[in-house]
Image (cartoon, rainbow, N blue to C red; front, side, top):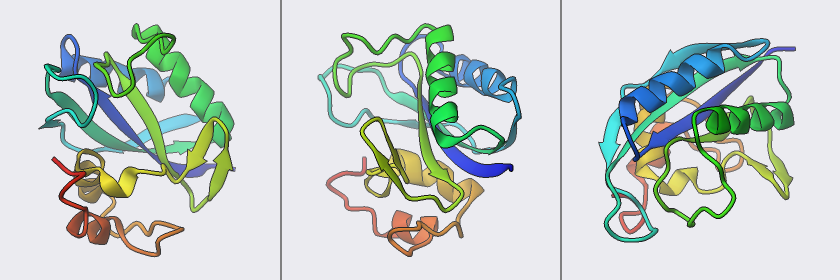
Length: 161
């Protein structure tokens, strides 16, 4: 069975746009997975983490995949590693060569120690909501019952750059 899912992409180290393009190409090469739509790339200030970080380049993508949520998570971690990201010893909210997060997977609600779907903080993050609103403005958050566009309009200013 093919699932429709949405992921967030971000990079603030090296050639940021090239990092996102390389990640998208690697994701498109995953078994049973197609990249169906990609938002424009946007530049945003880092949220949290140590001071002095470079701005992020962010995007969102719509995927059709035959991978389960857990398989997709593992595959995305593999893409990050292939591109040079190793999570061991990373500073929380620190600089990242590439960051790939599952935002939505069909209308699934899942809470596991290593995977929560929908992403638990997506509604607080302008750098996620802006690209998502471009490619899926009417997508309904299965827990909040609001569209991505509604979430964007009500994003708390304290959490959104």
